[in-house]
Length: 174
Image 1 (spheres, rainbow, N blue to C red):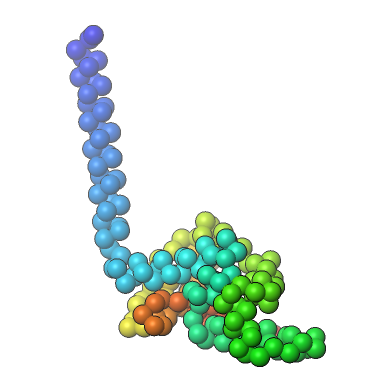
Image 2 (spheres, one colour; image 1 turned 135 degrees about the vertical axis):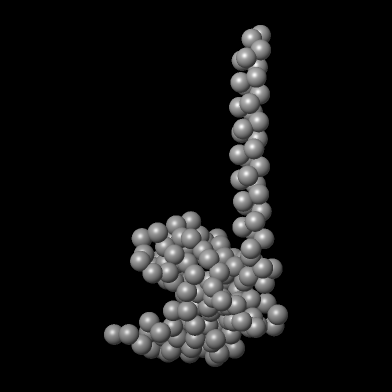
């Protein structure tokens, strides 16, 4: 075999190896720039959207803040009352925790207008400020000018997604 060809091939392999090593270092530096607390908050937010995609209603419920759960139960109770059905708060909390018929109806309606893939696959995520028990995550959808800012709260030592805290102000708009 031609020695020059061998030298050229060896140089090419070394160049590819050097580029690969630089890429690995870059990824390592990026992953180190996220604190363990930020990583925990990001994972908590992402998991709720993954549970939505999987239609795992009890898991979605577990990932939400108390404020969001209270708002969901109150709105479902109010809507049911308009149709002549009466549910206690306790009945609805139990139903949502177990993925019962009211939870299924609620989340199916929710997911008919919201596609979790928009957040999971078509958006860029970045960590916002983290305070003691409140964190924000910026989600920039590829077709949007401004990011959505998710609010998470640490409750019982676990980060939970505040859907109502994040999007609740919309209910006051005409």
